[in-house]
Length: 160
View 1 (tube, rainbow, N blue to C red):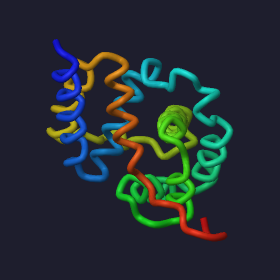
View 2: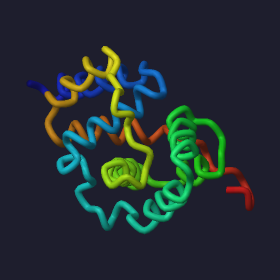
View 3: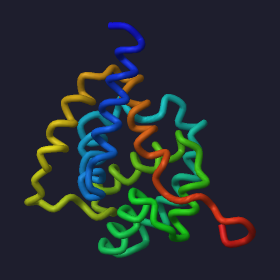
View 4: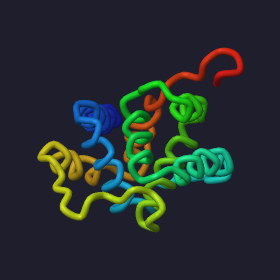
C-alpha cells in the first residue's frame, strides 16, 4: 500500500470520527485506549509533558462524576471553560497523554466510568475496525489529530 493510500485511510477514519456525536467521540476514545492503550501511548512519555497533563488530570479527578463527564464533553465539543482553555495550551502529545490518563482513571474508578449498559452506536462500531486496520504510527496520528482540536484556545492575559 502506498503512503498516499495510508494517509487516505487515516483521513477517512478521522472524517468518520469528526462526524460522531460528542458522546460517541468520548466512547470511541475510551474503546481505543481500552483496546489499544499500550500501543497508542506516546512514544516518549517524558517529552509529552506528563507533569502538565497529570496536573490537568488531577483537576478533573477532583470533580464529581457528573462534573467530570461535563468537562470531557466540553473539551470534545470545544466549549469554553477554564479547563478547556488549559487543555488548549497543551502540546499535541500532551493532549494524547491526557486522554490516556482519563482512560486509566476510568479503569481505576477515579474518573466517571462508561455506563454498564452502554451500547456503542453503529458509527462507533464501524470506526473501531478502521483504526484497528491501521499500523501503530497511523493509529497514533489519528488519535493525535482527533484530540488536538479539542478544548479551546487560551485567552490573552491572565485569564488563560
